[in-house]
Image (tube, rainbow over the protein chains, first blue to last red):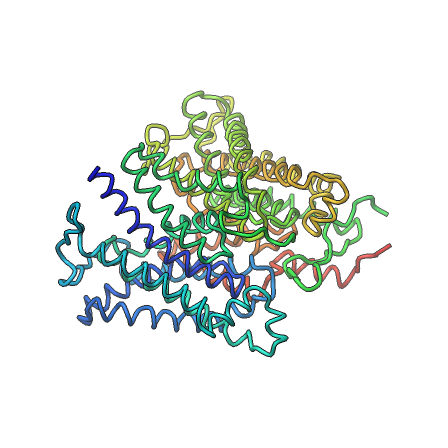
Length: 291
Length: 338
């Protein structure tokens, strides 16, 4: 029983990363209709940035948790203005390709500078050790990640659902033309929303740094699993993306514990296949308008 | 007048996928001259280039044409074609090592395996369109990669399959120069098949589905089944390329299945020109040659260059190489409409 609970907890923690990344992808997709392939690269940059800040400037984890999302969010906004913006009126596939190219560039820039080996990053001292949550001891850092990620997801949900900015973004997501007709400048929100999505990826990266091997390729393989996650949840649905993120984290953790390795790694894709058969638009998605 | 039909259709207004250009039909003699020139270049290639590079160009050209069959003529962007290229490479390698058959038989076996794999994946993937199709194919290709990575008893994991033989009725094909000419007919057959598919009634339906799926459905065409057939055919052609690639390199490595390989195939198509079919040949020649030159001059960050090319082509040069030439032809000999 203890083992099962531990697996469940670890599943929720890795699900937290999927959820944060899927949330960023979904927010960006909602506003821009762009699937950002470079999302994994920004996650990697977040983790790498935290490592470099600590190793070369002595900047502690807590500051990195602020600096990296803001800095990379701004970089994302610059990239949106410089490149992605030019292609948003074309077929969305072009922006998928563009961000794929950016991924290769960002990855190789980091690789050229730091090599491919993994760099260690220590969790802040306050979060070392473990906490007793009744049944058994949980590593403090993981508890922190889970709590933090849940807070971020709830925060984003509140932002979108209960603030004026969120209302505009949701309206622009649902009916861009109609929103414009009401005199709201939709274009003004595109760049900040992209930057916000990137900031979420960077945040996930910083959170991952003390827990996972920091290396230039850490984002690339992850983002493909996140693509499967958003197909399962339905990319158009914010809630669906987050729920699918946590769900897939759980399923993978249980699979790793109780199934052969070959099955554990492919479980997420098997779930995706089942969802495509049963509800092609995703568990929480709506059928797209026929192209 | 010639009997061939104009295969490309003007882009839909509003969405303007500007990679797809209306290709004018040059007079017959121009097209025959181009075909002759193309064959002459194919025959000359290993004399002008390092033959191993020429073999790589052949394989990648076929791969790109296979991807363009889906992307340019069916409107489906597969971002997971490494699954078929790589699966065929592994099956080809295993058959060649264990069965000692002539290499074209091994390649054929590999391509068939790729086509078989494409049936279930394609069946699921064609339920989605557009960007979702790209994500779904990418995800399934990653699944194939994970399986190959775990299934070490067959794929030998990180080491890959080594010592893939080049058997062809006892001929000595160890020299890359001669192997090029042994591989060329297979590639030409694959290219001819692609041309035949595009110019068949079946291919016309695919283009119709690309441009207006709702109308195609209304006319009674089973859209999913057409897409699935195109997907499997494309996987088979990609498999032919992947199998030859395995024989050409005498080894099969895991990165034949990696998502970067899928991405590179799409780059080659975009660079050559989406929906031009032969653009892939130009794209493959340019990219393979460039990568070879980069690694020869000791430049490590190949991704920096390929990624940069990708960004530039997508931003500024969406017609691609062939598409740009075709646009010039179009200006010189405008398409007649009836």
